[in-house]
Every structure is written in C-alpha cells, then in structure tokens.
Length: 456
Image 1 (cartoon, rainbow, N blue to C red):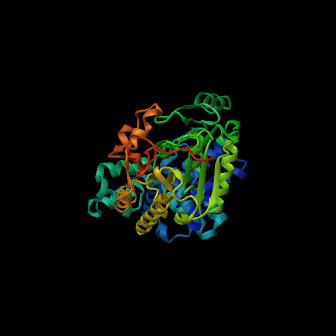
Image 2 (cartoon, rainbow, N blue to C red):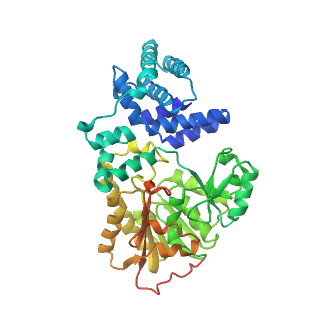
Image 3 (cartoon, one colour):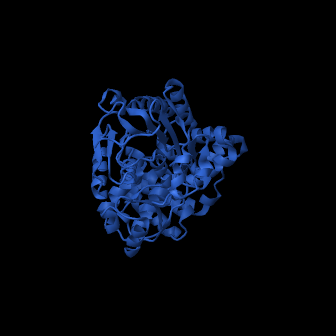
C-alpha cells in the first residue's frame, strides 16, 4: 500500500496526506501495519532528497532517470535500511525485489536486488557533498530539501536557523486537537478521548488545544464523530483567536477552504451570529459543510465564489470582521506536508504574492467602519507576509494596524508573546513551537472602533 501511495505522489501529483488517508480508509491492515505504512509514506517523502543522493551513488542509473515504480521501491528500501533498524536487512532486500518483480519485470527486479544489496553494505557510508559544493547544496542533501529553498533560507535566516528548519521539517508533526467550545469543555473532551484509549495533554498556547499521544485512529472515535474535537495545530488556531469574534457578529472567511478556521470562528462565537465561508472550490465547501454538521455549527453559510468578487457582493461594507487566510507557499508546515517541498517551485512565489494582494484588497471591501480585518498565512516567507500587509496599508489609508498579541490576553496563556514581531505575530517551526504562521490584525477606521453585533 505504501508503494502505491508514494507512486501516486511522485507520478500523479497526489497529496501524500490525502492519498494515504484514502488508502487507509479502505484497508484492513492491523494497527502495526497501518503505522508502518504511514511511517514509510511520510518518511520516504521527507527524506526523498537524501535517499536519491544515496541511490545515485549505488546505482548505475541516477534516481531521476528511473521509472517511478522502481525509484520508489529503492527509496523505500534505502529508507528502511537507514531509519528502521527493526526490519532485518535481508527482509528489506527480499521485499524490494518482490515489489520490483510485481510492478516491473525481470530487469527491474535484478536492478533492485543489486542496488539494495549494495545499500546494505554501503548506504550509511555514502558521503555528503563536500565544501566545494557550497553550503546550499550540502544542506539540501543533508536535510533533504530543494536546493533553491535552502539557498533562500540561508540568505534570509542564516545557517543556524536554516539547519534547524531542515531538521524540524523532517520530524513527525504532533497531532493537535481543537476542542469544540460550543459543545463541550477541554476537560470533558480529554476525558471522553481517554475512555476510548486516546490520551491527551493540554496544548501550550490555547485552552481549547489538546495534544494527542499514541492511540486508536481518531476518526473512529465517538468523541470525534459527535463533534467534540477537530484536528488543528495551535499555529493554525492563532488567526481565529486574533480575530477574536464575539457572539452575534457577521464574519466573512474569504478563503475558507475545508473550513478549519471557519469552524473555529463559529465555535468561538458559541454558534451565535453569522459566518459566511467563501471559496471557489465546491469540493472544499462540501468538506466544510460536513465538518459543520459534525460539530453542530448552524451559523455557517457556504458560498462558492472567488473572494476577488466580494466588493460587488451584498457583503460589501457590512462585516464586523473578515479573515483572509490566503493561499500561500505553506513553507511553515513542511513537517506536516512533506510532499509540498518537492511540489513547490521558486517561480511560484511571485504568482502567490500577486494573488494574496488581490485577495486582501478585495476582501477588505467587506469590512464595516470600525470592523476588523485579519490576514494570515502558514508560510515563513516575508514576501507573502509582512510585505503583503505593508503594501496593502500603503494603498488603503482607511485601515490601520492593531496589536495582534493584545487580542490574546484573555486566552490564559502567555506563550505567544515570544512570537510578537511589531504589531503582528509570526513564527517558524524552528522556534520549537507550533507550525509556522503569520497573523496581522487591522482595523478599519471611521467607526466607533468597536464592531457591532450583526443582524441575525
């Protein structure tokens, strides 16, 4: 199963998390085998660059020139030899040869046998690029990231933070849950999960956050099915908390996607008011609607539209608050989405920045005087964060900065003070905290300075 998922990611551009979840849903694997399949998919994807470097030294045909089936068979084999000591080397070779025969032919089986036998003896001794290759090349191979990205980080953050970023990106991300405050309390949710075999500890930043340990699959638990919790990293909770919606508000989520932040907003509003979720993709809105039903949130209205059309909608000038959780490069969540580092290209960044500026400008038209505008991303790229907001403020004089950190004073945590950078909040995963994020809170001047409750 792991090989089929890796092939889909490599050859068909599938998303690793979605392809794996879909495969696991229909599988009859034991818990141990599910864990191994998950380890192989995420481990091979994270370490793809380093694995290909090893294969290039052991094979007469470079990894890039191999077909996707045999390439991923070799990656799986080398990964197990380097990272999974519990699997005997002879079993790795035997399984690799069998897979090469099943998904290839006699020649690919012979290639797998030769390369994997060499890997048993030599994989750990394959040298990294030397100093003559430059820091970017060395770190790209050692930390298994694209060289263009490492070079960019070295320029922006320096060698120490870049090394730390690469290291953290290759560690498994914690499973963090968000308690549905409109339905239960953190203590009640933790107790319900524990009764079903999933132990949790409180999160570091917000009272609604729980960090899960080892246990049964979450989506099979009654506590999940009945809407007590959702999956969301604490870094992704920051935007809704900074927006700080009140019951009765009219809130527009201009880039709602599958609704992680939309549902958080509705929960913080205690399911009173209106949340209009806008997204151009129908399949994402269907996922959002399903999540809202599971969580018992009746105030969410979905609208299939491009947020750039909002200035001409009936929402113009009416919203108490607007969230623009803009599409971005995702460079703050690479530990959670390891395939993204191989999918993203440097030339994608200017296109994303252009889109972000257009979305922020258009969505701002919905904010009433005295209302709130929050811009957020899950990237650590300054051009997508500070520069977008600063450019917007230079053009839109009716908006002004509001201190994002001040809005978190009532959350019962001081953990976010370390992430303050001027009037906004930002952090990279190398900080040792949550996933990378950026959040800016703006206020539209010309009103009382306090948003009113929406008419519902």
